[in-house]
Image (tube, rainbow, N blue to C red; front, top):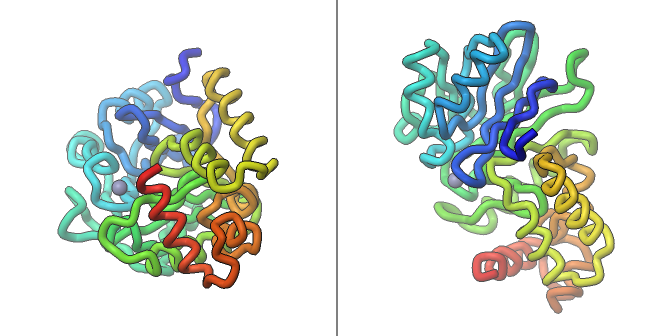
Length: 264
Ligand SMILES: [Zn+2]
């Protein structure tokens, strides 16, 4: 199996696109699927055809083209509905979502979590646990990455930190599916801050192994992110010590980490 061939057996189908983006197709019943951040319509259409799935819904996390470029074509070819947080900037949008809203798609419930920071309008989508999926599923776009977080482009550090804290309050076993594969680079950055962090070393070795075996580096879990992602650990004494900021508030530590990552 080629490293870029998506895995089709699970309900979440991870489709690598555009070099380091991830598109997610989620089969929510026998014959229907939704797609998250479809940057490339043809990749999605091929899998829909192979798997005999109807596309009903596009979920957009934010407006950037590398998350939305395939949206119009998918809408034209499948008649799917486009859902997202930005009426002006998301192409083809039918329904603008708000923080805390629960979307019902088939039998699944998806909670919208407003997460400004990377962009002014950005949301994550949390599929609540059910009989079909005992773990919750979180699509994080460019807010939370495996071992990292998104660049702060349209907001301040406080907005991003508050958004990450909201995500960090989800259950330990939540499966995290993010918008880009920056995983190895993120763990390398984490080790540049805490060279002796054994948990991060272990994760780096696991993801390198996964890549060699042609597997994706997603999903992670919320418990793993809380213990290894430096951006979620800005409030810990270990991180404060590593940055030589023992008295600093979590927000200042987070902002310093983000500044360092921007030039890493
Ligand atoms: Zn983005």
